[in-house]
Amino acid sequence: MIDVFAVPPGFRIVSGGQTGADQAGLDWAISHGVSNGGWCPRGRRSEDGPIDPAYQLVETPSRKYLERTEWNVRDSDATAIFTLDQDLDGGSRRTSDFAARLGKPWIHLRPGVHPRFLARFLSARAVKTLNIAGKRESAQPGIHQFVMTFLSEALAPGQ
Image 1 (cartoon, rainbow, N blue to C red):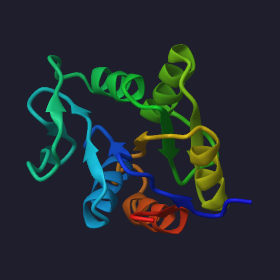
Image 2 (cartoon, rainbow, N blue to C red):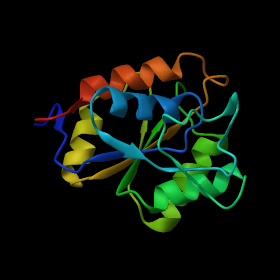
Image 3 (cartoon, rainbow, N blue to C red):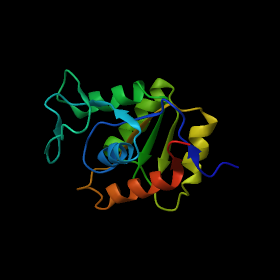
């Protein structure tokens, strides 16, 4: 059984650049030399102000968060939604709805779910572009660190 996903050449992580799960996915990619990007709202909007230019995101025509959410799901092979709760709500629920409507696989990752489930999910689907989505840091303090740790345990870059 696969316990760690060996990041293949050309693997990419995308997100919308919001605080919390989104930025953690981008931070993990940057710190591990993994290609990254994605769509963000026009004006590079996030809850704590403009998204840092270090994140190589492309602005959508709209300032609405849902447009970038849908476009990141659409342009990815799969989506990982991170929360600290058992249930999806708000933007996380909308992300899963977009994935279902677009026929894209998605997985909900939270405390109690072992990182090997993400590794197996990615391997079984030969994912090359992974959308990282989930809760904002203000809604779930600690989500950024949870995502960073989870990705470090599930993914093996450069193997």
